[in-house]
Image (cartoon, rainbow, N blue to C red; front, top):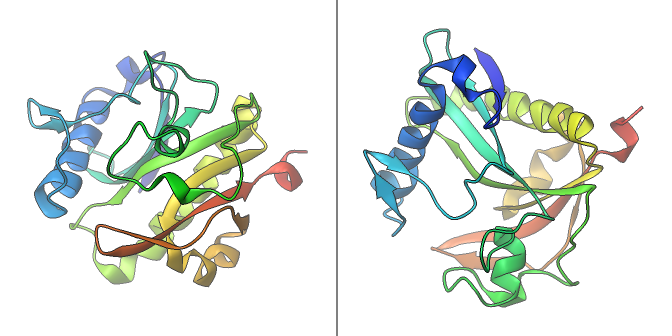
Amino acid sequence: MQTTTLSFENLHNYGELFANMLRARRETFIGRNKWDLPEALGMEYDQYDTPASRWVVVHDQVGQVLAGLRLTPTTARCGVYSYMIRDAQLGLLDTIPRELLDCEAPVSETVWESSRLFVTQRVPLAQRRPIYFNLVQEIARAARTLGATQCLALLNANWRHWHQRVGIDMEALGPVMQIDGLNNQVVAMNFAPNLH
């Protein structure tokens, strides 16, 4: 199992890995979850997949994608959009409640957003813990590289049961709310203690 952080600057070095990650997202979000999202050529994408973002991908040696997520700077802009959590708060997204944060969504060079987290159905439940651990550790490494001290994410509200096992300080930034029948909550992953 390998974990790679892709960017528009380096994705040419990894063959089909970026396209395979978008295919795995389509399989997860459109195929399994039945979300109404943009797709083309068997790949899922949205307005936040821009050169400003990074993509953390867990994969095997031949490029088969097991899991992934997207990192977007909170300073990003693409037309009227910035990043998913902020845009939901501003009422630009009709699928996520506006009241997802207890504060104003930050816009800062040191804060990034993690979104589109997925683990493919090919990964048995018993093998998911090391994959989540790899994802979180790679987020921390990428944060250090990008100068981020915090990463926001809209996660399943069960995050309190596992965050200490992966060694990341996390705190709730909003209420638990139901989205697509699941309890979700915005949390902040705080990397400042790890950035020495």
